[in-house]
Length: 594
Image (cartoon, rainbow, N blue to C red; front, side):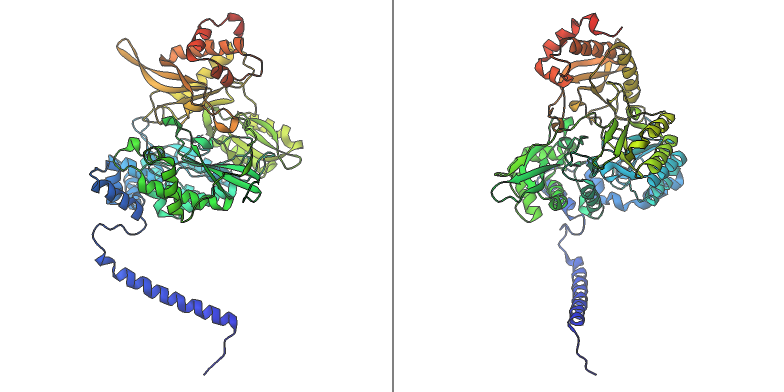
């Protein structure tokens, strides 16, 4: 029986037959796998294995973490994680590192428990996720969460036997902790006011979401030599500190120029790591929004290929770029991308509207008429399960049902009608929170500290709150001051970009060692036109001596600033450190609050 086919049927049949032929070819390729030359990298971990092989061939020795990853990929160890949970056991030795791939951090000796870090693209949750995380924190953790400096959440005090229950509860909410620690790409940050900000150039939410799922669905994104950070700045009012990331995308308006179509592009920045005293540098490349995710993937692959597998202290992207040179590394990115990237030379670019580093607190008008976002202060980023449920209730009743976290360890409730602002503020106050804060507390940032992190040398969160109490009682500050307290050299609280940055240290006092800090001042970031690394002001200051030291420094600022509008950052940059110390030593008492 013969029959004529129409065009649509013919097209379908051709595709059907092509599919059969493709499967046959794949089967032939699979049958040849056994004859692949020994040591040749194949499969989804090929980039990682090839990089390890080159390091060894060049005479290097893989660090223990690389050897463990090579033996069996950490993401293939789920059964081991489950088995330990069923036995009520925590990981030991190198397994502590490997378990971080599943988002579980064993934090002994600070706490004999797990911490779970999530992945929340652009730092935005809906209300049912917020409620679900509150339940998970209460059922399997300590009953609270900590907001991180990547607009993310951590659940702490998780017993060994509850680890899998916690991870499954997170996944049931449509979230994941996969790859949130160890040698992986961390939470993708974006503008917290995305889609509601009157001054933004681009809504970063779709890009963050696309980047998040690109990572989850590309195994080579988990084959890195060290951690990696990516941020999207849409040009809005609340900073995301994109220049502190390994990749920073900065929304930019191009109005013209030879060969440039007017529109919104993203400037590509690379190599930021302020804990190692480097901001991301401008590559001179402009990307259309739809190009950003695939180019980011190319950057990550180039990093995986060329990153150091023999020295973890030199394995971050900054050191690859330092070793290869900026142009050479960009060339490798273009090789992985498969095409040259668009250079910005000749483009007419509009300067970024300045961000407000304290715009995450208070009541602010949205670009939607009659709508507002409310910035809530969370004391050093901690919020209880009960408060989480209350926040979710407020966001559902008076907002759009979303909660937005910031890199400043606070959160926003968006889309509140003008008429509902008062009742929302009252409801927030009933939770023990607020939308207003003192000049000290507005910019107070603290990492976990030694109460919950084995690397920290001091109790940063506890010290931050006591320090705020002390300074508020003694100083009448009318300009917000950012104070960042970080517990160790990992600089999770980014002390180098604070007005005042404190990094914990053990201080010798007689025959004892006490908690203290090194003090840095005058740091800032690009989006507020304050990009500078904080300078060392004092070293090894015991904590009980720190509050009066900062009191005198801030008193000197109040007494000697050029005008009431001069910021602390500007004041610091006008003087060398010796002069600032001298002014603080001679700070007049009238500058102090009664």
